[in-house]
Image (cartoon, rainbow, N blue to C red):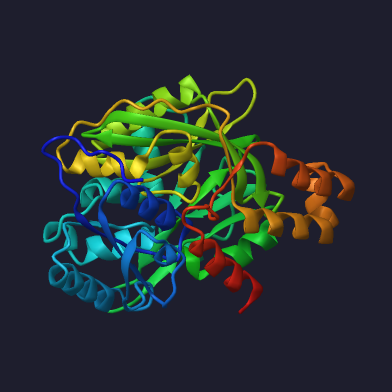
Length: 398
């Protein structure tokens, strides 16, 4: 059922990029249920989100990774031809290509300013900004020329982290986009191999390894002022040793992380959404790792818990009031096929089971018990089943 829209409001025609992703699917369902006319783009036909009943049409564009200039030209032409009211770029790749082409200055986008986005995605610069507002950061050194790094800088010990300055970067005009690397190096041999990785082509950070676990907050901000905040706890990941969450639960945001995140986005003056990631360990102040000013893969959980980030983001950019939203704690969302991958990997590989401290029997029992824990399925929805059927066919290799 479509939601009742406020007086003076009107549905819009919105173009959602990266239809291959689960974040795009969550955004499509959110904005479609709110009454908007949704179009999607993807590099290959039959994107996951495009299968949703809320999508009017799918549009195949050039690959933004390999041909970003052609992608940007096609996106602009499509936006004008369809008279799109707003574009919602989902991935870091689409955002980077959009800003590089200056489309944010010519078409309305549900995205932060180019300057704020650039500052937030510079992993060296954001640590400097965090220090200015009193947020703890890991000890880091910027190395502009990776090939010059023949030993760890003074003051660093193994193990250490090598992290690309940007997750996505473009080598030059006319070229495609590269993917930044992150490598844990345990000895000089690891270091010698790692610095040759093309993912460090635009420079790298040498960073101390901090023990502990990762925690994050998901935010919506206007002019650097937080309008909504959400947190979740990862219950299972793919791969089991750590990666993409496949089962997660809405929890109360940690006040320390929330205060630090608010100080950071205020300094950036961010308009939009962001995922702020920290490294936490007992007895220590949380340390900022990075900030990603885009929608995230587990977006559907926030929506299920009552914080509808895509709709709130649209309202903010449309100049409408953004209602205060409090999450329903304890809500769980499960990416079924990702969870099945978790199960299969854990059964096949003893090292993955050891990483989670579980036996084969415990892995199987945990998997089947979660069917009775009230979790909602992320992709499979009774009122919109086609995305799951498309995902299942692709998972099976059909």
